[in-house]
Length: 417
Length: 163
Ligand code: SF4
Image (tube, rainbow over all chains, first blue to last red; front, side, top):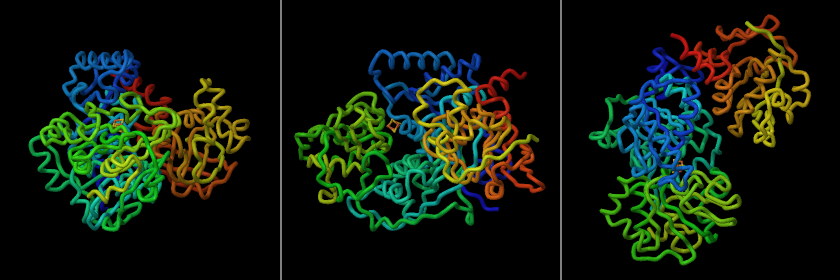
């Protein structure tokens, strides 16, 4: 019987042919955690074990509150560093590297055909490289550290086919916002989302990461793009291990197939306070706001900073707006310096933050006061996520955010591109 | 095999009606949590549920928030399993990791009614009731072991203590 990508990859792990709905026990290839490693260490200690089972599979990236914003966070980081040394965990990335999902990908852990578990809900991101990757809780991560095993339910698959080309001013972020807006934040609950169709292979890897990352906002367990030449080229000098490409069989059974023509798409924006409250930017254009944020694990890569710099070059942001720039990693940061992008963005009035999660999770570096509004490129706009309880978040593409920062009101970017 | 009575509900039973949001930040002990279960869906449930009873429901059981108490309260109330057409992802994981069996069945939810006596054959993937046989995706031994141990941490401890 033909199988989807997820069914195939989990069949290999289970050592028998499995289909959606079955439950298997798998030995993951890598497991990621971040600042929450200190909580995981706490759970792990409850198990009374001296050592983790497979230290070489653990990848820890400090990114959520870096550098430590107060003593409590400093202690968390210290606990993690000590644990890493004591356990001999080789893949530890301290505060200078950037957001976990970007660092994990750049360092070649996100590989086709691998099973990757992460104690972060946007672990779905590595589907951009053809991996099976899903988020789990802290207790489960502690248990994986102890046993090198996890139980997984084989997901049904929702296939989303894209055709056509993006019109000027429309990007991957607009496509995924449109899909989430049309279908709801729980449409892909427990499912794998397979992004395909003739246009999917034209998406850059950075753009694929935007879609796979935000698959989590449809409730998905994992996302998937079929690896191609572009993927192999990217992995050439960075793959951490041998890998094998796993593809869905022709005739595999999908829960549903959704079709989108990108050529008719216009810029989209998710309005407060749910990610599926999506409207065309033109419908909310003119709405005032206070802070703009370009970056995060969703849209903090070079192509994102490039488009923002293109719009802001030689111009100044509106005097009532603060603009925060948050490159996703040190690698992105350094390359953006070399290309003059950070210079352009700084001259336009942007504040360049250190790579990491910044204000995305509402812990430090640019939080909102009561009643304030942010227009950002991140992936979640739940009430108060970036600061005060009654502050509001709009989510859009880097182009829309840059254009909005210029005008001081939410703006359609197409007139600048 | 273990026996119980059916409590039947519909589609999309959400975590708010299973365990109300107002209790999630109160520290309640297991008996108190059991007494709150399904409060906003079926006030008669918590008073009358017997150890071994089974909840049968339609699609997307446990949708809504990720609160673990919505699984724990049913476990504490003595429910041995929830049989549904489908579960929300987080609920499914939470339930097993907290010791509540969640069984996905294509045919039992439509056929069974409240009050039916049923028997669940956990390893065989069968539900028996008045001569009828229904199926579910059996939980593999390892996952069933998590449920029977009373949850993931207990199970991991047990597993590690084995030579
Ligand atoms: S940037 Fe935001 S969404 Fe991404 S990992 Fe950090 S906190 Fe999570």
